[in-house]
Image (cartoon, rainbow, N blue to C red; front, top):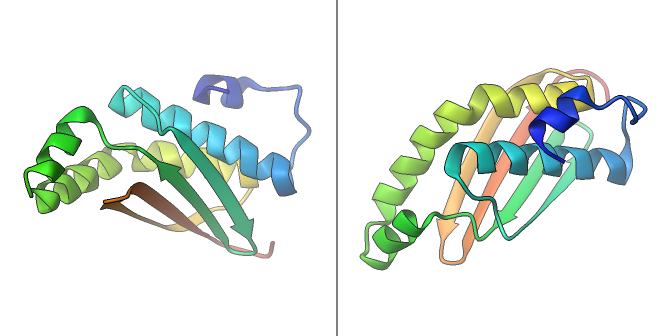
Amino acid sequence: MSVEQCKGSTSQSFPLKGGELNAAITSALVGIHTEFLGRGPSSSSTFHHEHLVLTLMHDVMTPAEKSLARGGQVEAVNGIRRLLLDMMAANLREAVERLTGRSVLALISGIDVDPDIAAVLFILDGAP
């Protein structure tokens, strides 16, 4: 489901819970990632527990990032990812807030180039 489909979806009952919520968040975040980077991860999953939402994405690096990493430029890849996260942050926050019905207090992200795995952690406010 694309970000636009998630935004306009009326067939789902809100608030979503459990696996349905995890799947909706995964779909929205992968859609945003694809929109900004031109490709999505090969696989991804989301885990939600109380005040935390964690999304893991496998095989997320672009061909250019992979070339940089192979050339030993891991810090360059990390810098590019920080810049991209800054550009995507408002969209990522909005998607998680809309789907959970809670405000995002913090968004923390990181990537490990070998293996090619990214993690996005959202810390939510209020009672679960």
